[in-house]
Length: 399
Ligand SMILES: NC(=O)c1ccc[n+]([C@@H]2O[C@H](COP(=O)([O-])OP(=O)(O)OC[C@H]3O[C@@H](n4cnc5c(N)ncnc54)[C@H](O)[C@@H]3O)[C@@H](O)[C@H]2O)c1
Picture 1 (cartoon, rainbow, N blue to C red):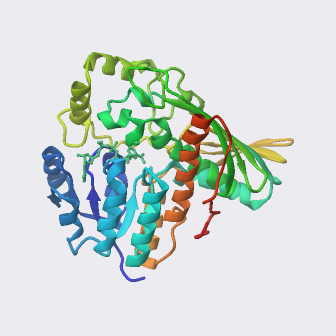
Picture 2 (picture 1 turned 90 degrees about the vertical axis):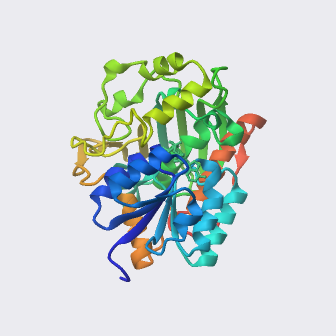
């Protein structure tokens, strides 16, 4: 092992970063060294919370020699150019989902880190969640026969969370397909072995005031013969956290009595400028930022109902383990609560940076996920099935 700790630089000190704070604070293998963000209030809070330098530009951040790896959590359109900047400075990269807006950008990101000899990891996504990993391990064990079918669904208030204008514009990576499908596709690909053969989908834009995809439903076939269905609605009606005993996506308890609160806040905000102000106020460094990083009653994170149907059992991940519905008995494979949330992401990052272990959520793996997501949009637009060409299996590098 070349080093004991990863010196981390943060590019984009916003909402995604705030979700990672418990991980960065709780994992002794990580040291947050510096950050970069155009928002002065985010820089000020970051400097005070982490005692670390906060720059205005990602170029300055990447020039910091104490930084081994850059966590890129800026808006999607900056992912590809910032990976290229980080790689040019010899840095490893953890970049948020969606990896990028096009397959061409994904190729550039892979090429840049290959040329630099650094690792590229895409995450966090919910395929890192321990119950999903456990489900994959149970399928791969062969104990329940071949995997035949996967069913996934998630119903949330995604479309009614405060948004920047581009988050409501599909051409700029807005909507549920770019933002939420990567989670579901990654979970399905991980459980199903990775290689999706075809996609047939319908996407939905049902609210003219928020004209981007808020919902989709899709049918996927895998090269290994498994089939999957995947449904998502972000229209804030039914909430599938009900299926996880009201444990929210974050692994924290949710109060179902707050039904409709997101939509009500958006309606009150009135226009796009005030909505952006609402988002900024709630964001890291903003006046209404709620720091949940020290919350103690946490289970594993989750992204809706998932059922993996093998020949002799249905496997269903929950935030505290995997329920196995076998032929004659139903059992529960409990998982210990996460000591540090999302530590699985740090396992891959530390493995890559310190021990040169190729990450599972590599650039190639994640480009294949983007191919599925883009196929959802294309299938819906053309009203036909889309055959895929850039898929990789678990641990494979070339498609
Ligand atoms: N994995 C997850 O759970 C998760 C959750 C939320 C967001 N995300 C992803 O993280 C990314 C950011 O989304 P968000 O919701 O945090 O948005 P956000 O607007 O809350 O945060 C983005 C931050 O980046 C900053 N920024 C803008 N331009 C920048 C630039 N050129 N260089 C550096 N920083 C810049 C903004 O000021 C802001 O602080 C998106 O790609 C999104 O898909 C992932």
